[in-house]
Image 1 (cartoon, rainbow, N blue to C red):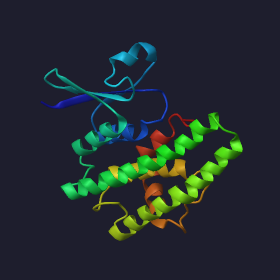
Image 2: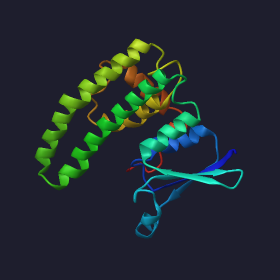
Image 3: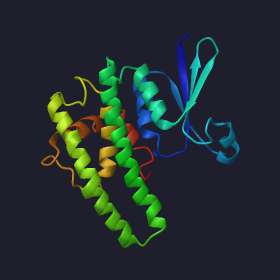
Image 4: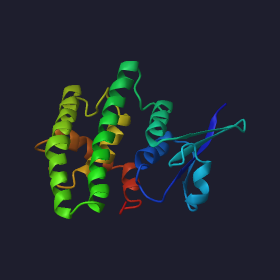
Length: 210
């Protein structure tokens, strides 16, 4: 049984999809970027009433479907060699990947949810607290990990899911420009290296406002 193609169902924006779409680009397998147009009608047909959903097609006519963005990314990373060669490598890659997801989730909670509930000045204070007490301390640990490995990547000497997550999330989270070549040289070098080439560059230019 061989994989012939994928269909990736999500909205017409980056949101939870950008790492997944980059993983699909890197797979080298033909895939379709399908946008949910009638979500109220499509919702009940998804595994957990949410997107994204990945559908995998096989040469024997069978299909495999799954949901949850992080699970999809891990599945694709393992399938195409971006999750390490040893259980310990896989565990470390997953650890750094989840750290990026956690930092990003907290940022978007402050940015999008709280601003609808509290005055702007309070949101700004929450952003400052998030930056000083969460973002910078955590990313200092990421910087240490990259420096210790010494290859320009988190684990081993080639790009993995952890590096892909860093390249996707760092430009968004660094909206105040506090992560620089002087403060986090290895993180910035990794982000700039990956984001200067496809598929990162082409994906960045899609849905620029999202």
